[in-house]
Image 1 (cartoon, rainbow, N blue to C red):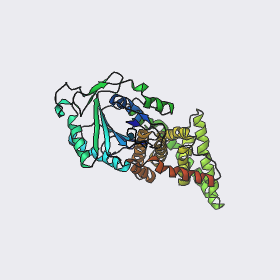
Image 2: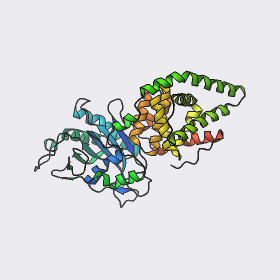
Image 3: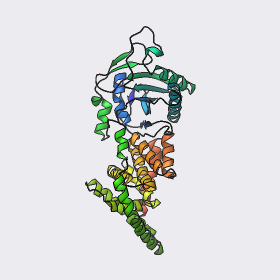
Image 4: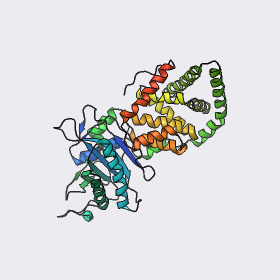
Length: 396
């Protein structure tokens, strides 16, 4: 097995039913990393998912390596909560098998691997046989999951369980009797090292991601108090620009305002409530907002994401949705799948009618690859150029 560690994305694969995260790997990336043992695969899961999963089913979708002499590559990774919903474990298996089959169909894949991470599982006793009762508490789920996948012509090539992804923990196979081993240190996994060197954070828990977008109630109240004045000023400038037949001038100034605040926040400055209100007003112009998708592929992507996080926490309604959508798109493009899904969920929670967030969420849920959505960023670069602003070259 190998993990191709270039691009990743992570939508809620079935956000209406359970927390789930997907990541899709870019097959064209050079230097794919090989994961040849179950222990190495399990140790690499936090890097592939973006955080250390707990009480989760993690499924790796396999695709053929470009080199026929090499092992298959991990083309996509999906994580699902192990929540006793959907009528028990068989219900879980059916729901998750549908999501995995959908990912496999989009990737043209027919084989997957599965890892159960759950502190409630216990290593089974050594036996001569191997049935559902002898492989730990989640044997029923895996057996049903396997049957459901097979109905979609997707096959489970391997499945393992571990109570926690930590050095020294015991793992065991859910398909092969008495096949078990000890986890190496996840921090020294080649996949983990590659992600750290690429500047991709590996968080301890999924809640660290959701906390990033928790509304700041006090700041939101302050921004709301300044928003009417900011919108009034923006409308006056917009009206004056239209009257003079120079709408580009208004949009250029609004875009320059956003870019200047990205530079400020990148230098460590904290935005005031008034500044947040002015930025929210600027983003209400669809041309300005759509241009800013271009930042996801440029040098200023990380700084822009910091601003989108601040605005998402400071604003409410459609203004929060705009900022969260920009964050979700940027995370999608750069490979932070779980953050993309959480950001888009926050956007739709703030504004269920937000058309761009809806389109991106559908794209993520149906397994659309990041390369397909880069077109949106390149359109933004073109709009900026038409306004006379150079956002720099696309670097990813």
